[in-house]
Amino acid sequence: MRGRDVRPATARQAATRLEREAVIIRQWARRYSARVLGRAGREVVYDYDDVATIEGCIWRGDPAPRPAKRVTSFARSSALPRDGSLV
Image: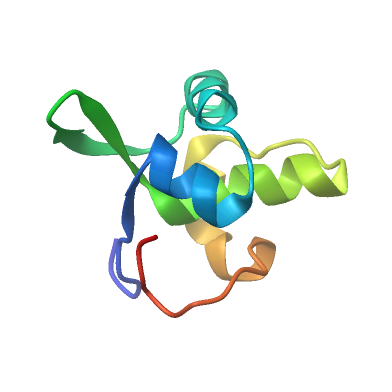
């Protein structure tokens, strides 16, 4: 993944930033194969940019791209702040 920093986030953290429920983030992550970075205790840690891309596609009414295609389209499809902070 050269060229971009990976921003880890649990479903709860991503939900807070995206103003969604954590259960929705977990469902989307499973349904659309969001990139899993590991675990923090009992929580799964996702690549936040991947989850944000999925959310953006759903919000716009576009089909969510396959995982390999999302890796190349993060910057174009996510209109979220790029401050790097985890909520």
